[in-house]
Length: 120
Image (cartoon, rainbow, N blue to C red; front, top):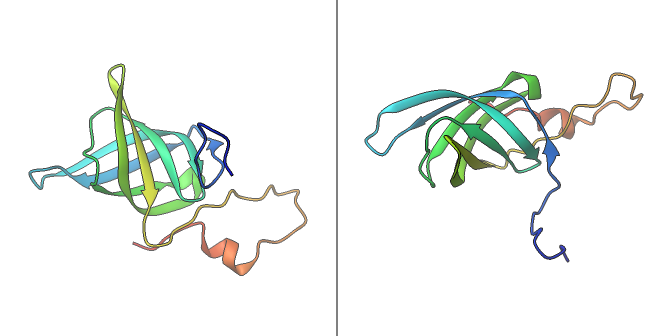
């Protein structure tokens, strides 16, 4: 059982990468911003953005540094100073796995290689 206060299904890895986000606001207008990742897990990530994104919104994201492209749903959006911290859950069974170090002699399995990105 997870320890009290940590009910996460997957461990989080700290990350400070740039991620591009595209979504539609409540009026149907397409919005675009660059965000900064705070952490990432197998099933989602937290990002810091300059404007509020409504919970339940679907976001298309691209983070080249993390080899991560796909869609996710906004689970949380909380104000933090003049910015917002958004919790995204990956959609469509998409999963993220950290890249192996070049010095790592093991080759990723086909399944691991395929889970780095999701097609648009």
